Image 1: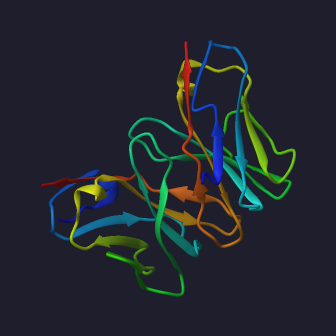
Image 2: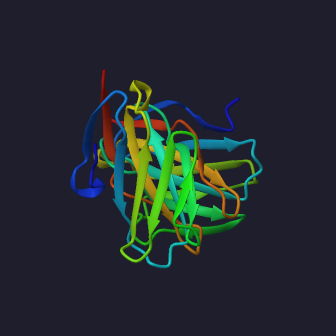
Length: 111
Length: 111
């Protein structure tokens, strides 16, 4: 399943499928990008980050892709599990340490 | 072990009555942030401290103030809370070029 982040705030996928969450960021000068997962009643939790000198980074079951040309960031989750259900935010860090968040996408995993 | 601790977890205040939210960290990070998060929205940056330097966001109302007496502690003061200030308030810390570490937030109710 795939979302367009700011324009489609919910994404529903079947357990075991891959998920793709998209995000458009605003500032071409941003040089550091982070994906966060937020569960109900908790603070955002770090998932994976990427710097502007890279276009792809992989973690455990997650991959982040960065396209600076169109200012687009995506998070891919492989073999999505029920525990992945949460709201996912992308964030961009600016030169002055400002960390700004995108609108978020709610991921629901159906068993 | 909690590394960014926010107290209290839930805070109820009356309309117009000053309230202070607190945040402490054991990470020795030099940057501390305050975010406001309303239901189903992204965290919104209010301000941050880089060491002792205070960085206010242009659209943060004057009603919101902050203090950082030392590296470990940071406070959010709301001088005259209105009904629209009811939200989750998130504190986060980071060092240069590192992800933000969030506390679990203080949920503020204004009656």
